Image (cartoon, rainbow, N blue to C red; front, side):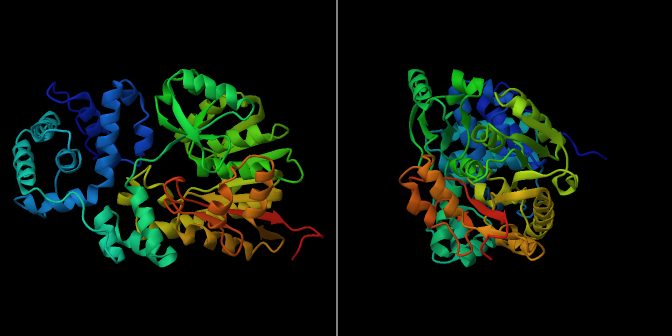
Length: 475
């Protein structure tokens, strides 16, 4: 029997922001969709600016604090171990978030609309239970925050992260870094844009005229951090001349713009959503780029994005598996931005923490190794391997395993390439020490979210650059 499709609440008693937040949270609970993608969807875009902001706050807040919310709701249920329908569980979480974390929302509105959501979704009788539980929660007045603690378990409880993940981060990076990662995961990510390097001053002036307030990026001279204003309503964004993209993500593609011998053919193995592909085209106008994507839905979105860009004639988009590259194809530069757990993006995609299981890391590792092996077979000069994961199984362990079977390849220092980019004016003057701290002894780099302080709030990334040995290469 196919899974039951949730009924969308249609009651006039429910505000548009709460109605859309409820629908998005249900979809996230019953699919592999991502919150940031759904929040950029057509239904949310059609809301007023005020309702869009509230909808985003409700969705992201519920996901970030879900572990804590469930822990407070459970003992108030008549049967604490009973399995709740997704609609009832979601209505309770939404109500609890507003009662505990959104002080400007009156308790009667938080409770009343949560009850209305349950009714409108077809749970008329259970709506009474939603009302009773939320009233008890409001009366109990639990603390909004708890001490961060001195061990991983207490840190996980305080920041609503899975304990097994926090324990891993503390073991791999130290408790202080784990605390920074967790705190970053509870904050709204910075909105960062990429200007077109050909005329950044003109773009800045146009954005300022349209009410956009911004400041320079922390790492890249082409990046700007948006402080206020609706960037999506600007002509520059709608034309594609500026793009929303995390600075760490931009940095990975920038590494492909500095290669001693200018590449004529470039491959982006896992290209969707296309931000890095466009930077590769921007930085390498002499090259033809092939962009692979294995997911049909992501391929269609990627194809549409590339077709609408000014680089469409330079980029060939293919629905294909990067582990099955044709033997005859050869590329001077290959980017492997591998599919991964995404643990470096929990601030942007908090739903990942509720889906990921320890066994998933081994599964990701196997596929990542297969893609990297395929990339080395197809590359003639250089391969960039990256993930948005913090887990060694998906990062250094992948590179180490593949290199044991590829004796004609070696790791080179990411800092070496960054120094060349800095000389070209692509990196900010303040980025040197920031990025130097992220480099490992083997030359790879792990950017931990929150580890650079409040001025560099990028997502988390791993980057390794592999170069084919030549007769003159150091061994």
